[in-house]
Image (cartoon, rainbow, N blue to C red; front, side, top):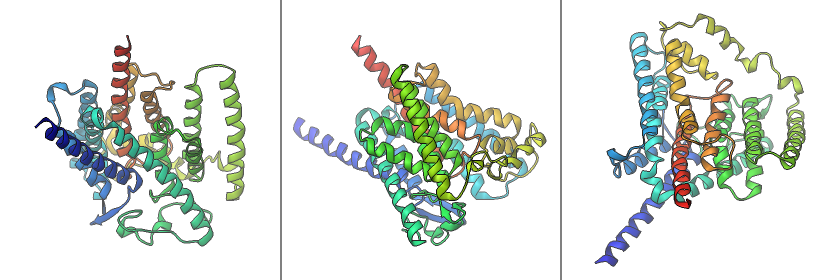
Length: 405
């Protein structure tokens, strides 16, 4: 009888592992695959996120929910409630952006805090982390391949329900990815900035999980080929955080010098490839976003205009859409996992896995000042996945420390 029960558990764990790997690979590797209903994207990855959430909730024990995860969900709920009140009073211009906003502010934090917690990770962390590594390897390799393929042939490879939304077939050129005839690296994310921002968030923990140096370098090459200044800033931050996490000494000074030289050479080569000079890096117009900053002077405590969307400069977009109080609530929502990880003892600069997750969150909070792609799939999904992993890793580091004493 015991043998039968053991076999049943093995079969169940194998099934769960398969579901997890498939779901996470699809969510990260093919985030745009799906359809549009009345112009609103319905992606397979987001549907699978609901499956993971349900699987996790079947194991939930309300008496053992970590307080840090509860705090995050509470802040997300307060922001969503305030935002709903503003939109209820003022209306909205496009239903797709309004729905995307609430998915990002309410559903995805709940998903990240529950699905990427001990409910799944305690017994099935191996498949989850393997799936993350497989996914990132795929999107960076496919991204570089597609970049070269587009440059040589002038055409895209479009696979509906997988690499592109079925309703976006033939429209990739319209997704703001043209740099004067040279198209950004977009991988399966259909947009260079969205791809780069997602890699900025998940990059540090991927580099922690990845043993192969070639793949680590490939990630940097993929981010470089996004031809996005925002992504380049993120790439620099990832490397600086990584060097700072190795401690202080002659080796670190050498690494900083080497990174600086390689970075300057790489940027010079890419700028020459694009037919641009250094003025491209110091664009006073901020890539057409400078005008957004002037709208700050017109912001109100409670806005009166219909909600449009969250602009590239995320904090300005939130301020314009939901007022000064809404911006405060948004900062609590976005920065709460960062603050809680720091207060929980996770150092920003360390070789610990929870530190790697923290770095990804901090990098996003910084680049959101430029182009955070907040409302676009799958940016916030990856943000809250990494936040959930950070809390789990923090708990595991503390547990191992206690056991070692």
